[in-house]
Amino acid sequence: MPAVPPPDSSKPPLRRIAHLDMDAFFASVELLRYPQLMGLPMVIGGGRRKVDEILSRDHAGLPSHEVPVAAFPLLRDYVGRGVITTATYAARQFGVGSAMGMMKAARLCPQAIVLPVDFDEVRRLSRLFKSTIREIAPVVEDRGVDEVYIDFTDVPGGQREGGRVLARLIQKSILQATGLTCSIGVAPNKLIAKLASEFNKPNGISIVHENDLESKIWPLAARKVNGIGPKADEKLKGLGIHTVGDIAARERDWLIAHFGKSSGAWMHEISWGRDNRPVVTESEPVSMSRETTFERDLHAVRDRAELGAIFTHLCEKVGEDLQRKGYVGKTIGIKLRYDDFKTATRDHTMSVFTADGRTIRQIAGQCLKRVPLERPLRLLGVRVGTLVRADEAPAPTSGVAAPGKRPRVDAEATAITPSLF
Ligand code: TTP
Ligand code: MG
Ligand code: MG
Image 1 (cartoon, protein in one colour):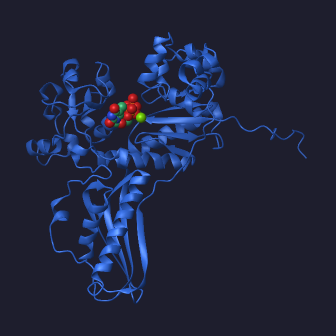
Image 2 (cartoon, helix red, strand yellow; image 1 turned 30 degrees about the horizontal axis):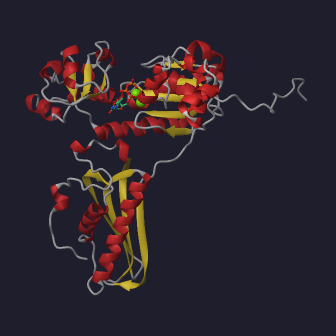
Image 3 (cartoon, protein in one colour; image 1 turned 30 degrees about the vertical axis):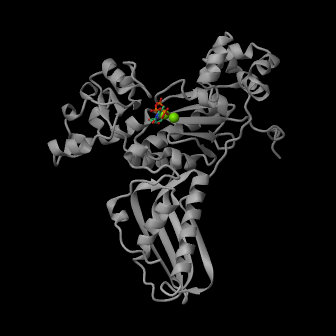
């Protein structure tokens, strides 16, 4: 028997929670395509200019990474309204940043290159960096297009140097898989981790321990806390409270008297760095579908009205499912099972996303024209795939359909042909 006693297993390991956020995400995605712009001020925003078209017209045949820097459009030449979605760190030195009007940005940094966002590429890289993390640390909570929480607590090596070793490994793996950098904060809980991931941006790691509260968290502006919005911040300021430490200096009851029972109590908790929320994993659905097996076999011609009604109902239900769960999709598919139990599927991918039952019905109807309908049918199903969260879908100007609204559909899909049922 070993002389050394076993480690104290009665104590649970300290919670180590990471928040990871990609650096200048939309802009960095463009730098992968145009690495010649690395280090230059560049912003993403404005209307959807066909930059690729302009560049390929003037520099036809050149691979994207060889297009000369002088060929790119500049903010100083930008006409039109719109806001900046993000800026490279080189552009941020001029005071340019997210949500700033293009005109103001052009005054601050006229020499910045301006590019539109490529949502397809953003989504591809978003999925790729998240799956890279999940291979290393499985407990990952999706918090939007460029950020996640990761529970390091039980991951091998997750406690070493307060989480720094694992954070470094994740940064390195993401860089290898995507060519992109990110910043990570590791702390006892989500609240502090979220604040910490900003401490050393870009490409930084910061480790915060429980006893760093006073030195690292209390000096921060109250507005930095996820959950304290502009309105609450204004009210706090009116009461002479500017920092997280100012909140902590007030009595819990005083906060409750001014902000109500739940908000006041919450503010007290967060100001003392307390937050027990777990990291919640949920896998993203790949598709949503509805199908039905008929009580008796139905024939496309003889039972046309009945089939048509069932088909419409299925499409509406899938649309409702998508809307309820907050997704939109652009691949619409159908599934048929014949009386001999053979199955046929067809699908069509649109250029826009939708969660609208009528649009789904329309595209599914087109798919139906591409399957044999001589034999009686036992089952009919409708599926919507290539899903993204509705709030991560491209803005309406680029053709997205908000849930419940009818989108502009591509010509192919809207071609009017007589429907089968
Ligand atoms: P952020 O993570 O807030 O910003 P960022 O990744 O560009 O920069 P940072 O290094 O500071 O994290 O947002 C992620 C992406 O979301 C951003 O690249 C563009 C988009 N976005 C908008 O579309 N509108 C906005 O108002 C903000 C803040 C971001
Ligand atoms: Mg980011
Ligand atoms: Mg972010």
